[in-house]
Image (cartoon, rainbow, N blue to C red; front, side, top):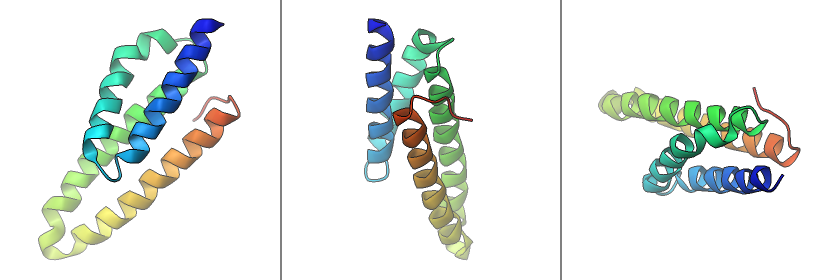
Length: 106
């Protein structure tokens, strides 16, 4: 039980780092490293779905963010980046809400 509580606190810290990633990308990089380093510790628990959710969010934001950045010169990139920011916020809020209720996330 102690280990689950410790991993629960870690998962919350990772969510916070991702949220701060909106302002400083370095915190998102720290968070993804933590996800991969501690992934085996949460395997088989309800927290595993949160780690998968966070990892998927990171890689989607990275790829789509690069596309948005590259296409800024034709202005569509700004629309992509704006939509991506809203999607990112949605993913973080949905994840934290499920986390606070101690539910898996899909």
